[in-house]
Amino acid sequence: MSYTYKDIISTLRRTGCKITPQRRQIIKVLQSSTSHLTPAEVFEKVNCNSSGTGMVTIYRTLEMLEKADLVCRFNLNNGHTGYLIRRPHQHHHHLLCNRCGLVIDLEDCHLEKLVKQVGADTGFTITEHSFELTGICPGCQQAENDARSSRVGIST
Amino acid sequence: MSYTYKDIISTLRRTGCKITPQRRQIIKVLQSSTSHLTPAEVFEKVNCNSSGTGMVTIYRTLEMLEKADLVCRFNLNNGHTGYLIRRPHQHHHHLLCNRCGLVIDLEDCHLEKLVKQVGADTGFTITEHSFELTGICPGCQQAENDARSSRVGIST
DNA sequence: TGCCAAATGAAAATGGTTTTCAATTATTAT
DNA sequence: ATAATAATTGAAAACCATTTTCATTTGGCA
Ligand SMILES: [Mn+2]
Ligand SMILES: [Mn+2]
Ligand SMILES: [Zn+2]
Ligand SMILES: [Zn+2]
Image 1 (cartoon, rainbow over the protein chains, first blue to last red):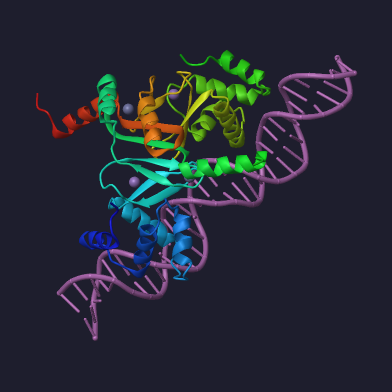
Image 2 (tube, each protein chain N blue to C red; image 1 turned 120 degrees about the vertical axis):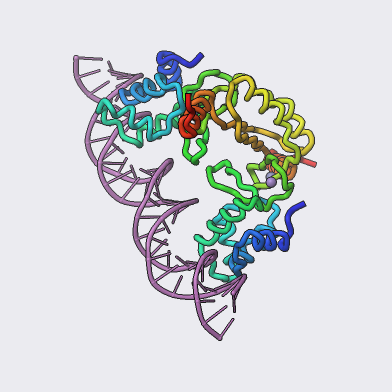
C-alpha cells in the first residue's frame, strides 16, 4: 500500500517542512505514477499544466522526500536516478523492466541470512546492501513476441 | 586468481584490439592495484610517471576492458564508478568498505534460486541482477576503535 | 497583521563523461 | 623493409545531470 497524499503531507508537516504549492504538485505527480520517474520526468509532468516549478525545486523536493523515507530511489540502467512513491514501507528491493520502466516492489528481503553470513565470514560490519533485478516484464515480452510474429509473417 | 598482464594483452589481441603503450600502462596500473580505482585514480597513477596519457583514453580503455569482461565495474557510494581487474572470472558480487575502499569479491553468487523464484512469481524474464554490500572492513573498525579509545583517554 | 526562517528559481558553476576531429600509430599487406 | 589503412589518441569543446549562489518570495506562527 502506497502512502496517500494526505499521509505524505502530514508527515512533512510533522517534520517541520513547509507545504508549498510546488511540493503539493510534485507529490501529486509522484502519487499518480505507477512507474519510477526521473527528476526530469517529474519536472515535465509538473509543468505540463504550466505551474512554473523549477528544476531546482524538483531536486530539492525529491531529496527531502527521500530523507523522510517517503520515496524509493534507485539507479536506472542508463545511470540516471529514478524515484517512486514508497509502497511497502519497510526495507525492500526492486525489479525493473528495462523496456517500459515498470517497477515491481519485492516485498520481502530474503537476504538477511546471506548478509549476516557474509559479515561473519569477512569480519566486515555490513551497514547496507542493495539488490536490484532487471529484465523484461510480461507485457513487454508479449509485445516483442507479437512484433516478431508479424515480422516473420505468419500465414493464417 | 586475477588475470595476468599477459592474459589481458593476449585477450585484447585476440579480439582485434591494438596494443598501444597507453593501454599497456593502464593495464599495468589496474593489475597492480588491490583496490578498485576510479577513472580519475587510474589517470593519476598512469601519469605519475609522466606518460602523458589523456583522460579520454582512460575512459575508452576502461570501457574496452569492461566489454571484454576483463575488469569489474561498480558504483561507489558517492555515485562515482570504480574499476577493478576481474579476479574471479565468473559472475560474482562485491563487498566494499566505505572507509578505505577495500573491495572483497564474493566468489559465489548465492542468488540463483532467489532470482529464479522471483522470475516465476512475476512472469519477468530476468536478465540481470546486482547485489552489492557495503560496510566497514576489520582494519577500519580497528582504526575507529583505537581513535575512540584515545579520544576518551584511557588511563593506564 | 507582521515577522522570519524556510523555500523558490534564475543563473552560473560544477564535474564527470562523451563527442569531435585532425594527427598519430599499430598492424597488415606488398 | 615499406607502404597502406584502419584503429587509436588527445586537445578542445560539448554535454548534461546535478549543485550552488543569492536575491526574492512565502508559509506558518505569534
Ligand atoms: Mn519501492
Ligand atoms: Mn570482482
Ligand atoms: Zn515492461
Ligand atoms: Zn576499510
